[in-house]
Image (tube, rainbow, N blue to C red):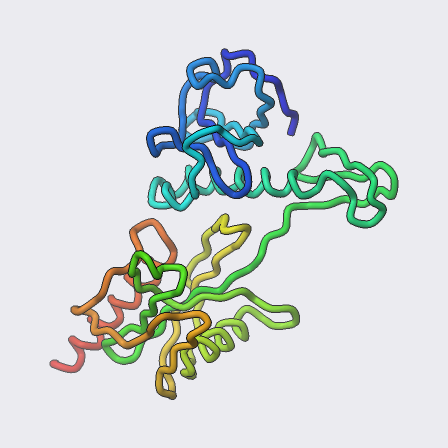
Length: 263
């Protein structure tokens, strides 16, 4: 985990990040030589490899084109994971200049992603917040909601929320669904997970079945929520997101249910 001052000959992908945002000149993640992108003299940290090219993290703010990483969230999943790593590391190092226990200045580890206090010997690691996301099926319908964060761009997706202290992931699924939609679910089964750097989450995806209750969308979280037939869907999340995978898996079950009704 050794940082180096760029001489101009270094090549690869460049994650220039500050405040949870990244540099996207012309809307794309920069790739090429440090000299081409005028990065000579900057301090950079190699954080991984993609397509045999080094991923470099530069913890700085560009004067222009600093954007939300959501703009490239639909690109190749492997590359976006590494970009997310860079964004989270940049925020981690920014917020850990000083020890939270004794207040002394910290140094960064040369062997792992960590910050070290030479005074009280405390060691800090990047924190990851587990977050559940669940698609719910009722016969040949799926529950979709418009979240408040999608107010300007109406996208309908599945329910999600953070795991709280002292509860299991399965308990978090049931609680979040009840809090956001007022319905009861069962048959919770794990599907997949996805790192999600907004700001430092690990999305843990599930499918579940409806049991009872009438939908009452929580106005603090949702603009609306309803059951949608698998052939009549609103705008849903783009591909390469765990939300879309859960929706597609549920739609397949909805079609199977629909076919069984007419056998």
